[in-house]
Image (cartoon, rainbow, N blue to C red; front, side):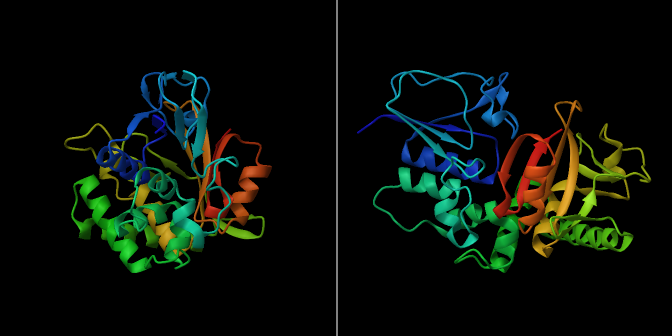
Amino acid sequence: MPKRIFIIGSKDMSMDSAELLFKLTGSDFTRATYKGKRVHSRDAYNMKADTVDTTGYDDVIFIECNVPIIGDPTNIINIGHQKRWEYGYGKPPEEFWGASSLGQIWDMVVRGESTPKSRYKYVASSEYLSWAYKNRCTGIRPDFLFERRVRTKAAYRKKTENFIKDDIDRASKVLDNIIKMGNILHMNGEDVIDLRDGFEICNKCRRIIFSDSVVYPPEDSSCLHLKSIKAYDFSELLEASAKNGIPILLTKLDKGGCETKFFISASDGRGAHELMHKWNLKDIYGDPGRGMVGGYV
């Protein structure tokens, strides 16, 4: 049997589940890195990323990445959905499992078992999150999806499930208030909440900060925004956006505040298509059909 190695891109729930699968099946894998640190979305397809030594392997499988390698593999395989050459790109939500990175990995490493456990399918559906909440992903119940994601977030953030649900509820109300404020951008026929001006994402606490925030001094953190009464957790704003079917356009600073990233979430595809093709961004990633696209100025 050919000897193979999987090279994993940036961290997310699907990649965490993939690593678990590799460990359970004894599959060789490594993480793509850039300057010694795990790649982020921009670096994952950067040929200036760190070189991976694949000497002795017949098959090299890139998962949501493409980085330099040393070696002479017989086959190079691309798994993912971020780029046009990856199998999962452009697939509809009804085909989410086979189109997901996790589903593609499952087919390669799990032998003799055709039906994946439900937890893997629910993780995979997150790649189509806004569509999954609209009940478009076959076999995925939106109510079960929400509860599973809340449990995962609670464990990751070391908070109670009720705390996470309250954060999502607050974020939903924030979105409703922004709509009433009229911060709407018309993108290719789709109404998108415009969070480019008057809002920012703090790189320390990962919270959405309103320009008129009232900030209190923290007791145990160097980040003032953790005590802000108008700061909302970034990830839960995205969750609320997907759950309520409200597309949002955001900007954030990457690379220590040196590069501006634009991205759209929960789009029905129209706004994401405009961002990808008409905004003259660089290092674009994502699939408009999945509702999420990002790129850099």
